[in-house]
Image (cartoon, rainbow, N blue to C red; front, top):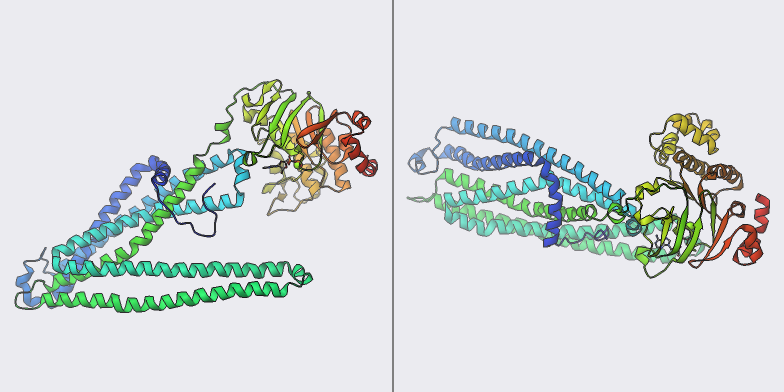
Length: 609
Ligand SMILES: Nc1ncnc2c1ncn2[C@@H]1O[C@H](COP(=O)(O)OP(=O)(O)O)[C@@H](O)[C@H]1O
Ligand SMILES: [Mg+2]
């Protein structure tokens, strides 16, 4: 969805659309355009003034041995006899250069950083409001690394590459004009040879770089063979697959060797090409130039010839750097296109247009609801579900794994739109309700609780940002969490998450419950909240959950019968349909699926309850 996968560098094809997309990104420059234009003025002035440099240097170098030919000097562009005044002018030139360059760098950096801050903000704002389906289709790790790579590509380009590119183009054009002016004959000879050589050298160099990149990829592959084998060493040994793995490794390192030998051969050719052709071309031109300065009526003065050589060097350096700069700009356009793809995607706000804010009492009605996940439209997960949950009731959802229980909780949260039928909250279709408003009345305690980097207090406060410390503590107490929290030396201020303390499953679960208590939702969803816990923590968590469920409509998805049997209504899901529904006693009487499940878990449920 977001362009090619990582790994193999994609060849960037620039189409009209990609330019249009990229242009969208440049609209972020608009607020800073005045500064940006000033930066460009500095850039143009400093680039043009740089073109004077070879001319003045030529005057300086040429004046050393050319005393005799003062006659011909009067014919040159600007007659500067005095060495001191030439030196002064050079100092002046570089003075202007350095001042302008300073402001150019500072201005471009400022514009870039401001623009990027805005782009980053927009991109994250988009991402966080993306519909759930977007996250099913894009791996989060890939997404974040792609975006940050794309953003730094744009950053580099805005800050330096574009400016550098135009500076070099100005230098090339200016140099060629002056070269033609000094001696069009010599200039034509030079333009026909040197830049051609320089461009061949650049592409040659890139080809070699590509070869060594390939070798690098292969070596990463061979490293992963080693890593996998050693990590899974007991697998390798128990299957006596050492020889098999060795064979795989051998093949991969043979390929690395072959590639590196091949690139070595090309590197050798490259070196001899440079030595022979490049220096050959230079010797040829110098020879031609020197011939022109000789004779009774020379076509060229020594000063002019010196300037000519300096212009040539400057131009070649510029020509050599242009392909890489251009490639950088191309990449940035590709990167902008990727970023714009995200920024221009429709977010949940564009998809869920409902704006009603009815009073929610917790009454929920599913009316013949059918649903398939957007990226697997062929598989119907729910095939017509109808049930009602009245205010403050507890509804238990049971059924084998994959029956669609979690899907129902996702639909309650309006993560997806139903394909047929409707879900009503207090008799209002959820399509017509403001999604944020709806979700603000719900809380979910999932099986796998994710804690954010921060303190325990921050993590509980996540349920209601801005809640005061007493409320947080009360919530923790009601969630049976205060005791273990206070057993840490830093209490509520204990760091959790990746870089903090590791909490047990039951402890995390109780923090999630405290979060939900703090949110005080009308509708509560417990999706297998206790199924990963040992029986000791389950007792504490269950006790906290029982308290949490009072006075709300609760949807309980659970494996354990002890949680289910107290529900006002039990829905047994089977193959996308409600196979049975009723109270525990009614369903036992029915002697159907539910009775079977109870029988299977019978022993366990007795021991728990
Ligand atoms: N994000 C998803 N995209 C596509 N299919 C999904 C997704 N989540 C679940 N499913 C499929 O929907 C069906 C019901 O899943 P789920 O509601 O998670 O089952 P349960 O919670 O009852 O175990 C399964 O067949 C599952 O493969
Ligand atoms: Mg599930």
